[in-house]
Image 1 (tube, rainbow, N blue to C red):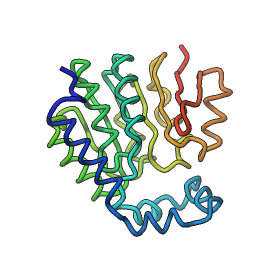
Image 2 (cartoon, rainbow, N blue to C red):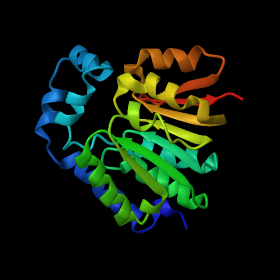
Image 3 (cartoon, one colour):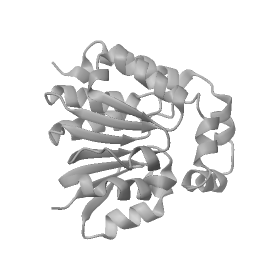
Length: 220
């Protein structure tokens, strides 16, 4: 049985994706209406993210269905048992990763979310999916929540929170990434210093995938 394609996970994900696609969120509409350069400046900011994500607290802003499936496939193929996620939102990406852990025989997923109301919704969704036992949700700024109490070894890292913080979050956890660990960064182009690090450092191998994902492996 593949957890991702079985009840209760599959119908829950279908509902969550449909809600994200069809539920109007005025703050998200207003953000999308900004000039491209202004949206880029905001998304790349290291200082304005708290206000931005507080304003978008009612918006799921999920990974795409294709990226969700990619997360599941990568976690399964890596036989991941310990995963860290930056940016929980309503838990759509978290559900994909937790389903992979379940099918890998169990493990631990630490995910962090700045907005308390989003963390609560993610917790409810994971409970509905029967996957909450695999997940620890840390509420607050990831620069604090991921600073301490991390597992000795991390198999996979997902970066899908405030884009301007990707470099800083990676630096927080990179000494715990095992050789061969995978890093998936959604919309990484909004953090040029992150992209420069993973594409030029001898410690990483990295390649862009599709239009919006940077896939990186930590070298041994």
